[in-house]
Length: 422
Image (cartoon, rainbow, N blue to C red; front, top):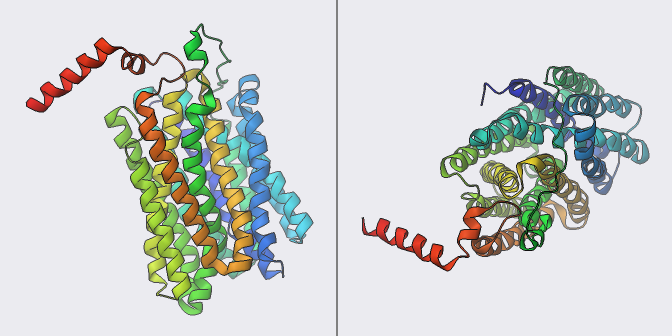
């Protein structure tokens, strides 16, 4: 994995880019609230950012095929950071939303490019660990910069945070120039049977996408409102824990995302930890909801954050690997785009809709709604696991086809019986 050309440069660039993103993620909504803005506007800053991100992600695979990874990623890192200077001049609703949208364009192109590029550079047998290591660098960046943004803003003012976010994104742009010149593989039209043509891409990636979305919607609420909820629950201790609790969430996500990648590489297929992770995430959000509603100890929120963060990291990796596993290798950029759209649209929709819920039903209502969404994702994933035993993936899935042949099916069952006898 480490010998793959450009892999380390990708990791450093991604860490810097996510550092810029994490630095400003909780700061911008808090700045809006401190400026007298409503919870809906505060949530909309993340929502419009993610809306621009998702729109950009739709067109990024075509740009990667035509222009290449390096120029797209360098431009994306520039757009992610430099417009943040605009927050210095105003955080009124229209200016703050325009700047957030511009930054979202850069974030959208960057997130698609980095996931797809890892799949291009790293051999398939190391893809689980490589994707997990990507999560490690993202998680470390979030652990460092999520609390740092809040701490620096409280100590030196938000303008310092905006400038620092721009500088860190420029570091990412410079590192992108050290990545080998690679273009995404051109679309191919393989000769396939009518049965294979009938298997649409969306059928193969829909449930993994919704699994990510169900947790990323709640993550939108966690990133936007959990610091404020902690301070509201315990004004004294909460001020110190507000940033740390986001760092804990990111750290838990980092560790368990890598762990799921190791398990996937050892088993040769993804999906082993998907449903258990979703259940743990659901229970973590329920704990956060009840703690806020009942006014229990703020320390219980840390346990809930660890549970949710770890579950979110595992689901992220499992969903991405499932898409790579189900689609041809020539379509890794499309798989990355779909995964990122699911992730970022969920974060944006969650921040916006759950922000409206928070304005009406307080923070406990917002997190409770997020728990319901995760429960819906568990139902879908469980149904997909049952149906998946009979799924034929889009191209060249010999194993799936053999299961449809009676002779082969009986032979496989006989082999399993002999193994049990041993």
